[in-house]
Image 1 (spheres, helix red, strand yellow):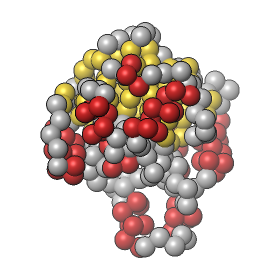
Image 2: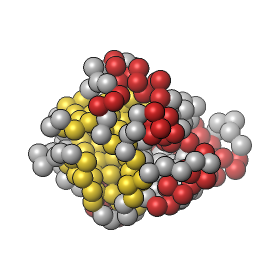
Image 3: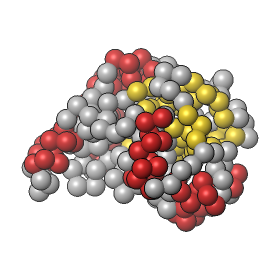
Image 4: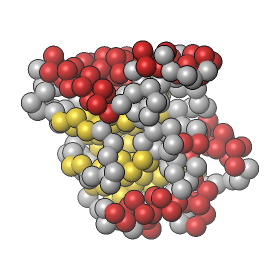
Length: 256
């Protein structure tokens, strides 16, 4: 299995995953043109995508859905709650493959296990994606880390997890207090410290790659987030086995 984070952050999110001839996207929060161009950079044609799986209904994860569905006929996968909000927002109906949190579904060679995450959206989920040989966990956009999330991510070979903000940088930022409260809330976004606690719960010899996603441009930096994650993995005794990656452009393909 390999993956490439095409976009990550409040301006848009999109992840490409491939294994054994199956190519999928998780989220499409950037334009169709951006997705097409970024896929071309890694030698992938947009029309080869076999499915688009949506974590939740916010526009930075869904903006590209209408064009991808209508022009390229990419099959859509989401929870019922996510489907309803997306259609209400864009005033259009799409053909959905609906799944429930706690259940699994297949797209070609890939098996998706969906699990609920705490975020202020209709019915948000994370995923563990497997191809029988390895497991990739995706958990972004959540305000805290319930035991259920840790349980699902334990045993993964690679993780894409949220390191959204440094708490002090957020509190000292010029953002409105109500926005700070939302981000810090139980259905907001993970701080570096919260993400590191999640890492402590799932770190092990099997974990080879951790990708730090949804890093705030104003209230965090890749350097700070990387330092926190690296220190946590070192304290867990797995630093030598696990690489820590942050978003870079052009986006590299990461082998799981």
